[in-house]
Length: 355
Length: 254
Image (cartoon, rainbow over all chains, first blue to last red; front, side, top):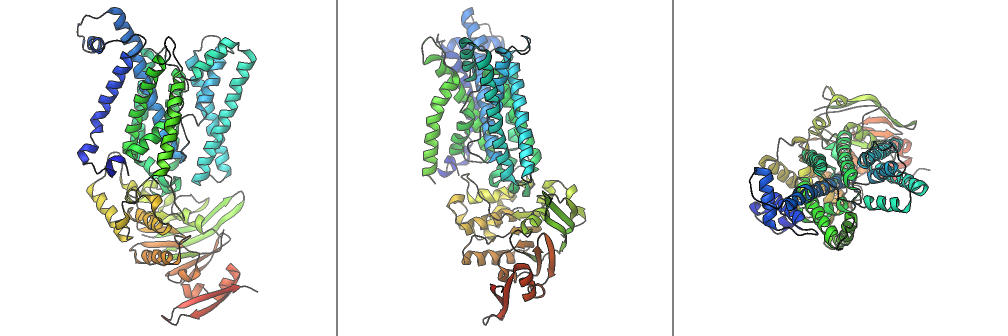
């Protein structure tokens, strides 16, 4: 049951978004490149793109070309990758755990990443040889492993097999793990940070896309595309979880294997994104719900729709974060939360009203 | 296709949920599983469905040990209907039934017209075709159970396992679900609470504290002595004046 089906659109029209998707993404990336403190005309952007991609030889201002290629374009593309990756993680976790409040940070990833980040920047772990991103990634990995171990221990205590308990164990373990790592972060900040450092960390935790370069894109793009492919490959398995893990198993899904693969891959994607741009909230929670409302529950449509919407949404949020306060860049997480929270409320209210 | 349990055992925290259960289900029969709450009916069904590996003994599908079979192969032969399946998703009845085709699909084997026909047929078999476009959460308990049975039928199973499918249903829906199950051209193993409903099965197994304590036709098994011993009730066997069938009337045992 989805919008297109209820409107009885012909099949051709329903599939129109398939080629609409790349064009929407392209427009969003161009908008992300054009809009900023100094607005750059569309023509200049297209010329720079032509120069770089096809070796065309348009004459463009060198500074403009530098801003477009080295700062804005890489930033817009990474924003798209992060948005897509976080939205996909949300889709997968909500489906597997059958909990509408599941989001990519449920498994302690953002808490672990922040602990890793403050351990490196404030406590001086690694003596300068370790970057903030690497520290955050390691912290995320550590927290995730701990949560999984905890979930397994708690799950086996209840007999393991029963799906509801297993999903519940994961969620509780995630909460416990997150609390632990948040406490560690607070401890490190309280013990050794000065006010300036604490503010810098706060800023990073809320999400920060400035400082993004092509290096980050070469990491973020494969992560997002890889995540998308893994999700699409398992789309029918995700559908089969509609009535829970037992029901999925009775329909031939190797529940433990599929759950392990999908959660591990999504944790990896999320940790990669968080280590580059910080913990951007609400994308992974709101986008999947919004897309369920628009295209329905079947993952064949939900997965690509969520990836696209997440990508476009985060590019948009990045633009807003750059222009809303003149001369100052807001943390992007502030924007996603300010837009996401009311949007979520609207979805909830309309969703229950149509029942 | 023959489903066999050989000395199946299952324990949790040293508590025996299944204890040395051996059972052979013949192709085409309707087999009823009865027993008091907590006697192991559901656990046995889950083990037979391949959802739970037995900790002792083994389950065979024809001559193949189920432990060695991929979940997908099991699902192509055996379908399982849970006591109560529910979802928060906004999903239509037809879409639920379409899930039953999962074991036959893969990323490289897409949905075909044949799958559409099987889903249509399954909806028709349970009489849910008129409600196929309704949303799951708008359906009544009996309709939901029918949709779940249709979902199981869409798996085109040889063996259908049902865990107390009439639970929480009013009497009319209970009877219609049972009539539906009886008409299905597949082997059925069904756990039942209502002992009079179990009379319609070809064979009955009685579970008591994790053990299969009795096995046979309803007339052989459902005796006053057995009911007093296993269920702790006093039963009087009466004859229905309409069709001469046996009915049981229960009283608290003195």
